[in-house]
Length: 249
Image (cartoon, rainbow, N blue to C red; front, side, top):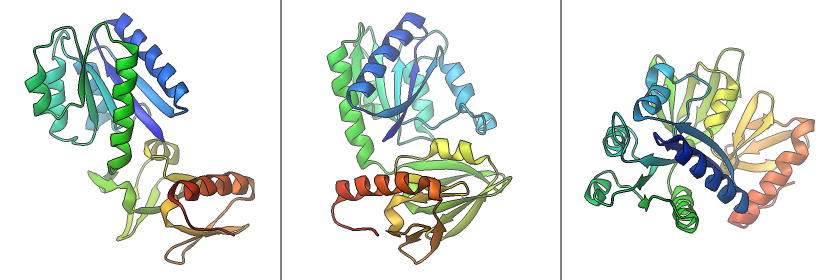
């Protein structure tokens, strides 16, 4: 699982301390992750605004650790604003004053952590967050025909890359996205694997692997690079082991 995490706190020493703890936690749990840090709500919002959507640093976050007492907009107000368009991100509040519990319910916060943040308590909350993420359907917001379109990862069968755009093949059809392949790949979860320089495939739709192709449930054959064959095979064996039951050639 690749987890996308953001910390928003106007105290740099707190940012660095939480970063150190998260790095330790991901190492212990052998998790892949990306971590971005923001020193104000305004800086965070600028980074995720629609105008900056195609910037390589912009991501939809899985876990948000928000300080409540910040200069400018506070963490509660930021969370309420985010919830208007983002119902999936897991919000964890960090505070020095335990007076905001009701506000946390309003934005479906997972937990409050009191400063100074205790390592064991943070790790326990992050463990809960990962379990919740595993049960939550991942969603992408992508630029399609000049508008931001919400696409469920579960509906994506495979992605075909061209020079200036990506064709996302869904169970219901195809949509074209004008963005570089690597930027789209950054947003995908661990359920996807690159099998060719021009193709990324959703593991859940793979029914068979040969030396030269991946065959999907609907019979579609996707080219498999010789260079990537071993990596894809190992990834699928691990995937099958987790979910039990299907064999591959």
